[in-house]
Length: 193
Image (cartoon, rainbow, N blue to C red):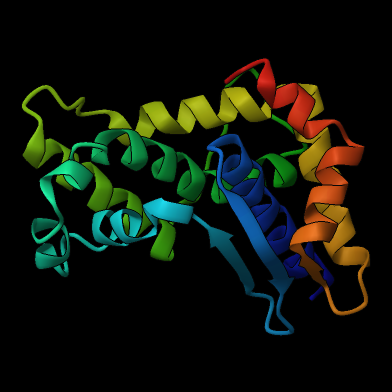
């Protein structure tokens, strides 16, 4: 079970790293006894739009009923959220592969993260005629490139270990941000924003 906890800690740390990269924050992260992860993000004023974008296939009225002014920011928000959703599986895969070898790596993307990214892709392709057909693959490459930066990967690794080393495998926002500050994560991501 320890290896499952480790995989989950890296998965959740990937989500968290990309969440801060996208200029959002994380309220709490926990690796549950079952081996699943639970991360509570703070998307600020974008929360309603993100809910509508990621659930647009099952509940199209959520997106359709948004004010036009909110819909206008949907492409930028959708892009950021897709990176956050992909980041968990990519971080987990980098951990399992002991790094990215020659820029190529198999990533198993499944479950709610995959469904939400597919929803984003479908929504954007229905709104924009020039939406790239390889949207998901391109975003996976962007996350891999970001996580291949040694300083960024170090922050993710230290965060995963901090989760695992906590007796209840749960970190608060302050504890998460302390780790990211200690590893200079915020300084490193400024170079790429």
